[in-house]
Amino acid sequence: MNKQPVRRVVIAGGGTAGWMVAACLGKSLGKRLDIKLVESDEIGTVGVGEATIPTLQNFHHLLEINEQEFMAATHATFKLGISFENWRDVHQDYIHSFGNTGIDHWTAGFQHFWHKGRERGLAGDYGDYCLEHRAAQLNRFAHLPKQGMNYAYHMDAGAYARFLRRFSEQHGVQRVEAKIVEVTKDAASNAIRSIRLDSGTELEGDLFIDCTGFRALLIGEALGAEYEDWSHWLFNDSAAAVQTASHGEAVPYTRSIAREAGWQWRIPLQHRVGNGLVFASRFIDDDGAIATLKRHITGEALMQPRVIRFKPGQRKQVWVGNCIAIGLASGFLEPIESTSIHLIQRGIVRLMQMFPSNGIRASDVAEYNRQAADEIAHIRDFIVLHYKVTNRRDTPYWRACAEMDVPSSLQHRIDLFRETGRVFRAPNELFAENSWIQVMLGQGIMPEGHHQTADLMGDVELKGFLDNISGSVNRTVAQLPPHEAYVRQYCPAR
Image 1 (spheres, rainbow, N blue to C red):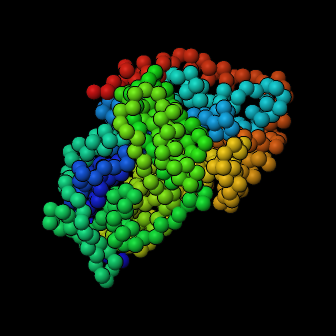
Image 2: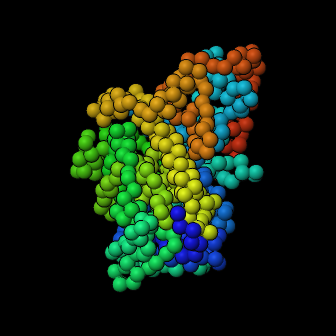
Image 3: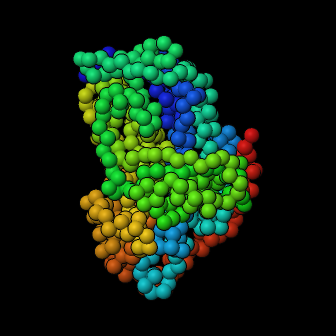
């Protein structure tokens, strides 16, 4: 591999991915590197990744970004989880919330004690024992001492990119307004030597970051990195998106509403609502999808719906030669669990941990690719779970989902939970045990039994144990202000 020190970094493409990369590189290594980001105002970004998960707080902490300034600049609201409506079956809903549910024993998770309580008529709904779940249900939010509330954000993705651009430029990143018209490679090493811009400028670099979205101009078109298609597990290949005026109070959760051939998102910001329908084009055409979306939006439409095409899957290699793909250029999973920005963040953190200051080495490239592949595969399985485990059989789309074969890694998790109530977290996996439990219970899997540790409690002791947890949750939630009132006081948009 190339042992030449990396001093010149070229980021191809802006948007959320490009400016997140630029912000982190500028803040951390801006004094040692020459960092340029190339983007064109004439090329739009997908710009619909407006819901996040709690890990974004870690990214902002690393960059020392003030939360109130970020939220005001991006018209952000808080998010405590995702409401899944019509997923288990029509008119059956559940919430996948952030945070923990109940109290675990070292031998058995809380779900085993809850399961016994349900059998004995002593327990309420599983979500009654989770603070974030109850706060979401009652539309309440506040920061709590000792980070006692787990939360993420709804935000304007375009405004976030602009916010990070200002941040990046303050840390030495240079923005180049141009279109990329040609990628020049070194024939001997299959590495990128330069990119030629429509201005005639040839921009050389030691390391290139491909943030050109689905086009993947560098990693795909120029370097030929293969794409692994996952559409046999994830049927959706399109999304229709539209923004509407705010209508009613902004709730502290994302709504994911299953429809006849896909699902609808509803993301409340301070100044508007993001809406869309993710759908499978072999079960419904564009006109049908747009008509479905229009029937189910509230508030005045602020734009005409636009359709976005995608292919679920991943690059078999996201680091090739001196090029690393981050964001949509590296792969895509539909935003059902709001993981797109998280995967950008993880790619950036991995880059920082393995940054090739003293030259690109094959061992780093191999390890980066291995970690990236493992990480997105874990998330893929979690997303496929939502489609496979359902009682819906009312349309050809849902019947096909229920009948499909799934990855063996996912089938094992399903079987394990159904037969024993047990779950596990693979190393470096994003979703913790409680996420798997909430979704599997919500989608309709009830374990056949529980761990014997739960049987050590008699009915009186078990009822007291469960009631203490739910009582503590309810007392805390009762003291929280309404979500929208808290946002207006804490981070009103400029």
